[in-house]
Amino acid sequence: MSPAALVVAGIAAGALLAATVALALIRRPPAGAVRTNIRGLTVPAVLGGPLVAAGAGLALTPGSLTLSARIGGSVAGLCVALGAAGFLDDVHGDRGARGFRGHLRAALSGRVTTGLLKLLVGGAGGLAAGVTVADSWQVLTTALMVALSTNLFNLLDVAPGRAGKVGVALWIPLLVWGSEEWAVASAGVLGALLVCLPLDLKERAMLGDAGANPLGAVVGLGLALALPSWAATIAIVLLLALNLSSELWSFSAIIERVGPLRALDRLGRDNPPHDASAE
Image (tube, rainbow, N blue to C red; front, side, top):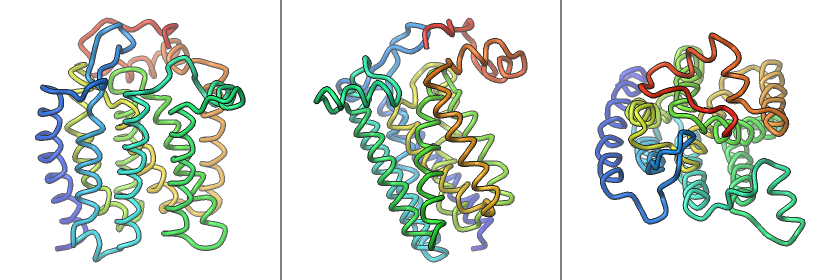
């Protein structure tokens, strides 16, 4: 099969597998995997399951591994590692510690939060991916891109469909101009995302950290493989700025004040606007 055909087949297979897993988890969510969303509704945070299952499973198919075992293995590894760390935070996370400062303060007081563990796994996963798929200084840029994108998607996942929409918006150009091997390896994640996004928008389930983290990591890897060195440097600066700005300002409050962003953020939802101050 051609790479394009492998991508189409991977998206279809990922969507089918994700739909099966998602429906089963929504009916019977794991203990503790239920959270209150930004509108105060109780929603199962289970969409990480289908994303990880489809993403890791399809990345390790013969077609993906034949094109590039290094990239296929990296996509699968990021899905599993970041999905597991995210699930731990979804179920046992301390909601009182938020952001880099919150987790750092907790660590300095002798308390290691699941959020800090998640950040460490993101950094280690990014470094492992960099060592696997890149050479020389590009190891560092790949690691930074993966880690920063992982945390950014985690920050975006506070309103139904927000992280998923950003993921789809970035995936489209990456499929056209990005790495062919990454497109094939990550097709299962995209197929799963196309199934999970409507469920997230309709508040039947949410990505949770177990879904947002691997989604961001795989997108970050795609960016690292697609961008030339000068563009990768700009992307890292932008990602770092967005991550740090979240310590000072609410993304939701900014989105609500900017008309086009507000319209895109609400697109596909059938519920009243949320309270941005609740973020």
